[in-house]
Length: 255
Image (cartoon, rainbow, N blue to C red; front, side, top):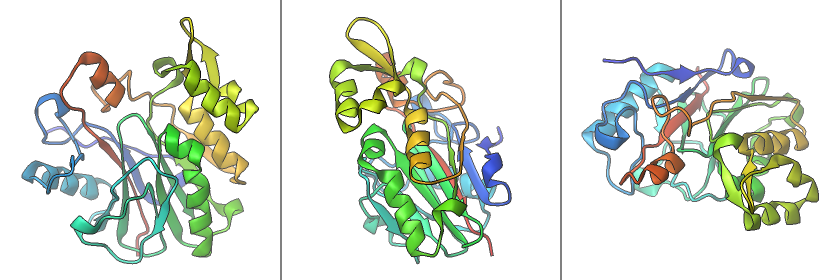
């Protein structure tokens, strides 16, 4: 049995967290490994085993809390675990309660874990391009502040996501970002005719820094280019595979 791989951020040292990939799980087929995707279905035995392995790696004994992610800018505050069939439709979780393990699923989008050690507040955000430009990280920081966090004390880490070299977009995609802010063009480099390469990780880091965070760490891991380590929606699509896995990123306060 292979060990669960959990990437740790130096900026979050001392806080229970981990950006998990596909290694160490029990799912089989094209989503073999630590696939945490539910696909709108009840938990399967394989999913439960993967969940248990993920929790044991990051926060043994904790209660996993996840969302029904919709690529929105919405963040929710968690005080207690909610029923599995009542997961909020949102894309970021914030808590000040020890024992709750916040989990975000990704498969090319950027997972962002945040913490204010002084205030005892942590958060996890799912930042795909829609959520990122819509302000999901801004909403996450604002929600953390309602629990007593101060943005100058918040640190953030961006986990594995699709990298610029692997993320080809068209002219309309660039125009959408340029309309929001002409300076956003710096996150694009020319590609083949009428196409560009987008740096999602750098854009998310920029949004966090622009919001006033002093410490923003980017792990620099490309999900698309590392099929043995990470799931990737775009890679699965390019290969014509019938499904793709979802990896989970976790953060928790310990008592």
